Amino acid sequence: MHGGDLIDISYFPGCSLATSAKESNISLMESSKILGLNLIELEDWNCCGSSSASCLDKELAFALGARDLSLAPAGRPLMAMCPRCLHHLRHAQLRLREEPETRRALERRWGRPISPDLEIIHFMEALVRMGPERLKGGQVRSLNGLKFLPYYGCTLFRPPALRRQKYFQAEMGTVLTTLGGQELTKALIYRCCGSFLSAARADVVTPLVNEIMESAVATGAECLVTACAMCQLNLEIRCTWEPKIPIFHFSEILALALGAQDYEGWFDRHLVDPRPLLLARGLIT
Amino acid sequence: MSAIGKVSGSGASRPAIIINEQDRHFAAEVERLSGANLSWCYQCRTCANGCPFVRAMDYPPNSVIRLIQLGLRQRALECHTIWICVACHTCSSQCPMVIDIAAIMDALRRLALEEGAMIAEANILDFHREVLHSIKNYGRAHKLGIMLRYKARVRQWFADLDVGLRMLAKRKLDLKASRVNALSEITRLFIPHWKRK
Image 1 (cartoon, rainbow over the protein chains, first blue to last red):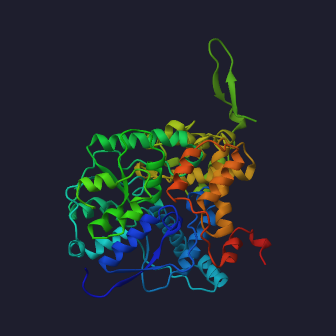
Image 2: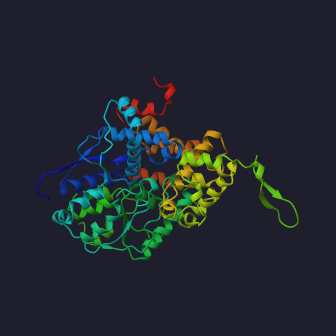
Image 3: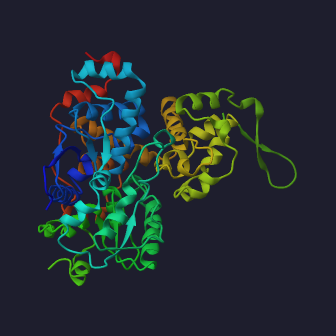
C-alpha cells in the first residue's frame, strides 16, 4: 500500500465506463485506491458528445464538453480514462481559452466559473507522475511474464490543434512490464478499431478487427490490453477470427497485479473468457 | 446538376470536368468552416495509405481534397467518404503538411446536411441522430435505447441480433438509462438560441 495522504483527483467516467464497461470503471477505482489516488466522480457529468456530436454539430460538441469543464472544481486535475472523452474535453478547453467571451457567456448561463487552466489528464499520466516506486510498492502479484500486446488503436493520434499537448497513453507497455508482464509490439497496435462504424457498418469493421487480432496472435501474444473501452468492445464483438484471445481493459490487469480480489465480477462480463489464461499463468485462483 | 460529363468519341467514354459548372467559392467555404488550408495538400497520398477505412470509401481522403479544390461541390457532398471517416486522425497525424483532414470531413458533412444533399450512408447518419437523441433526453448515451431506436429506424431487426443478445447476457446493455440531474441545461443546448427562453 501507499504511504502518505491520498491525492484528490476529479474523475470523468464517461458513458462507456459508466455502463457497458463497468468492469473497467471498478478496476480503475480499485487500482487508484491502492495507489493512493482519491477519485472523486465529477458531479452530474454529461456525455462528452462522443463522435456523433462532433460528426453532426461542432457547436453542440463544444457546449457538451464545456458543461463538463464547468462542473470541475478548481484546484485539482480532471482525469479521464476514455481516450476519446479526454480528447473532446481538451478540445472544448482549447476553444474556451481562445475565446474568453464565449467562456464568459457560458459562465453567465450556468452561473458557474469555468477555469481555462484546469488540468485535464489521462489516468496513465497520473500513474507516470507517481513514478514506478509507487507501482512497485503497491504490487502484490507479479504478472509472471504474461505475454501481452498493448493495443493503442487511434488513442495516440490527434487532430493538429491538439498536437502540442502531452499524451501518456503509450505508457501502458512500460507500466505492465514494470509489473512483470512481457510486452510484444510487432502487430497492428495503432490501427483504429472501427469506432462507431461497428454499429452501422459492421461489414467494414469485421475485416479490420480480424486483421488486428490475426497480427496479435502472430506475434505470440496471449492477450491484448487496451486503454479504450470502445476498442475493447469492438475487438470482442466484431472478431470472427479464430482462435480468439482475451482483450483486457488496462485497469483490470493493473488491479490484478495490485492485489484486487473481486475480479470474478469483471471477467464474467467479457465475451472472450480470460479466466483460463489467467489461471494457467497463476494470476487468479 | 453534376459537373461531371462524358467525353464522347471513339473508345470508352471518360468522365470529364465541365469547367463552367465548378463552384469557385467551394474551397474557400470549406477552408473557412474547417480551418484547414487546402493549398498545403500536394497529393502525396500519405492519408490514403494510412487510412484504415480507405477500402470502404469511394474517394480516398486526398481525392476528396482534390474534389473541393476543383469546385466539384455535389461530388464532394454526396460521397461515402465523409460518412465513413470516424475521425481517428491517423491521416492528420501522418500528413507531412499537418492538414486537419477530419475537420475537412466535418465541414463537408455540415454542408451536406444544411443543403439537403443526398446522404450516401443514411444508416450512419441515422445512428448519429439516435446517439444525439439519447444525449438530448438523458444527458448521456444510453446504448440499449440507441440500438433499439436505430434498429427501428433502419428496419433491420435481425441483423446483429446475436451480438445484441450476447451483450445483454453479459450485462453490457443497461435497461435503465443513467441520467444527468440538471437535464434542462442539456436540452437547452439542443434548442437554437432564438427559441430559448
